[in-house]
Length: 328
Image (tube, rainbow, N blue to C red):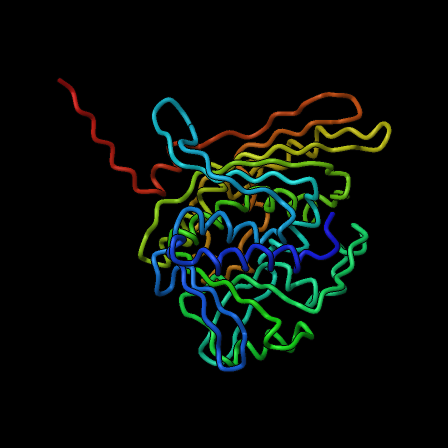
């Protein structure tokens, strides 16, 4: 593993800046010399830009790719984002997890990325995985409708203990192509989060992981986009976990409780559940946030547990699919 996720992520952002024109993104510096990379607020963004954004979220230590098409059935095929990692717990819960709610004045954003290794230095995941951050740079991704100003950048830099010129902020709205891609890239994360927070499973036993999720259709309505991007994972995300259990430990119950369909609230769309929680994301049922379909490979016995399913009809309803059948 690389010594620093922030340094690995910065290598990616440096490449994004170098290729900004062909990625349809824009990089600039604020008055305090903080670097901001706009991936969808005032620019169009791109498929490759979304791939790189997701890699930054994962701390630069996981692979992200786009599959075209990503087959969900014989009926519908869509582009899909693929994630594979040899550092499942660290790259997801230690970096990709959207664990930083940023609210400064009228500015609001949800923060992900390796900058969290500075902000949440006491996160048990770092101790569990033996990781410590040594870099004096911080890279953060923001899911936000607006670009940050100097005040926001100063706050983030201060919380991370770095100078403003050593901070890189990468931004994309939910209602953008890059936003759709980076959220669909979170299927693995949701499953690992569920194992850790709800099922009380030692996630350091997950040796490798791979996942694929359809890329949500871009919707200019931010509220609807939020619903569609989460539904993409809940109804269409697929995850494969290679787990090294203890001697005599059975993974069947873990696998059975992992997919989104194991939740009592399964069947309702994200927007419906969001409304029931009075618009508070953190009051929503946590166990619904999981891949639709899960495969667990017991690396001790060689057994494979397959659970959950792709819910094509609910996915099509969420995505507002209009089927046009031409018959001659």
